[in-house]
Length: 269
Image 1 (cartoon, one colour):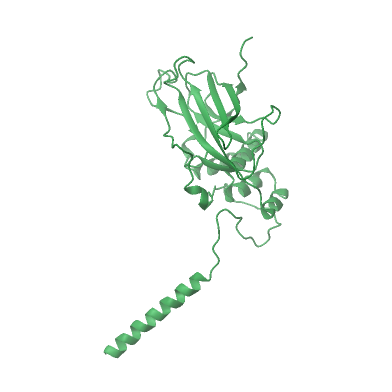
Image 2 (image 1 turned 90 degrees about the vertical axis):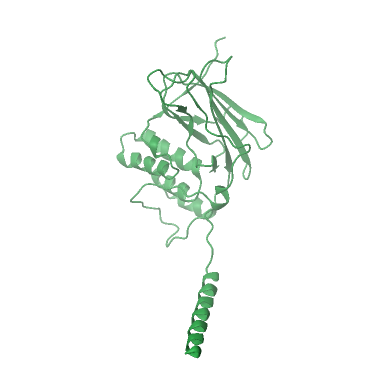
C-alpha cells in the first residue's frame, strides 16, 4: 500500500510540474498593446458598448501629491440641494489617462450649482503652466468639455511625457476661495502602434471609440465618442455607448447627464 501511495503522489507531482512548465511557455499579453485579432485590417463591429481597459503599467500611476475629491456646502450649493457638491473628472479612477492628441479635450461633471466661473490649468512635466483658461459656467450643470486650443501659442503635448491638469470651480467669490471645488490629474501622451493606426484608418467614429478604449487611450476614446454624440444627438446607440464607456470607469451615476458647452470668460475692458 505504501508503494502504491508513493506512486500516486509522484504521478500527481509530475503532472503538476508539466502544467507549470506548459503555463510558463505561454506568451504574456500586455494590456498596453492591442489584443491579437483574426484579421487586423478588418474594422471592428461591436454589439455592446465600449469598455475601457487601463494599461497595467498605468493602474498604479497617480499624480503627486494625491488629491481627495473636495465637496462643499458653501457658495456653490443651492438651497434646494441638501447634499454635498462634488466636481467629478471623467477619467479612470486614479485620475491618470493617456492621449494620442497634441491638444486633448477634458471632461468634467457637476450638479446644478451656484457658480459663475471655473479655471482650468495645464502644467508641463517641469510644473510650468503652459495653458490657463477661465470658463463661464453660469447656470450650467452636467458634463462640461474643456478643450486646449491649437491656435493660442500653446505647445503641443510631447510623446512620452506626463502633464498635470487642474480644474477649479469658484464657488464663493474671487476674494474668498475656501469653498472652491477642485480636482487635478495627469495625462500622458503616447504614440500609436502601427497596428492601432491601421485599425483607426479603417474605422468610423463609433468604432474608433472602441479601439481607443480597449487599447487604454482614455482621452481620445471619450472625446471621439462625445464628438459623435454631438453630430448625432438623438442616436440611441451612441447614447448607450457613452453609458457603457463611463460605466467601465465607475461613473455610471453621471452617464445620463447632458454634455453642455462652455464659453471662455472675457473680462470687461
